[in-house]
Length: 212
Ligand SMILES: [Cu+2]
Image: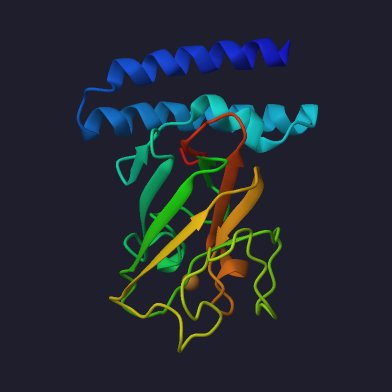
């Protein structure tokens, strides 16, 4: 029964997204806000039924303006900024933290992440990792999900991306699964600087959030 409801909701939101597709940013924000509330309910349902959050979340995916998709070339380029919002004391990715958002890219896509550190006080980094929360205060080593999926010098304060600086990461998402985007700088991931990063096997792509 849940699966039927989920599928129906997915169709509904596809139609909603299509209807809003030509609109400006205001429309997109309104649509994503509605989707967030739906997502919260579905995540609870998914843990009841033992399904993975990634599977249950697929119906609410929408492509944000900071994510550019080329389906013919199988590429996705995204701008991820730390410290632009004050959420989690600035230790966030585009305002998201502590697993409250899920980025989804399709298996086989070439992913480019342009990472910007707008936090005036702290260095940050970005990696796609197979680690699961809870995260250690200090990482002994990186467990990258994909070759190259890490900003330079990600593990240390003095080598990570400094305030005002940017770094670019390119990798191929060559294995479907559920991963995380996290900051390797000591104490950052454990205090919330991480979100979900899933690689879909069915072509799904976009962002799903649980913020209300
Ligand atoms: Cu950080």
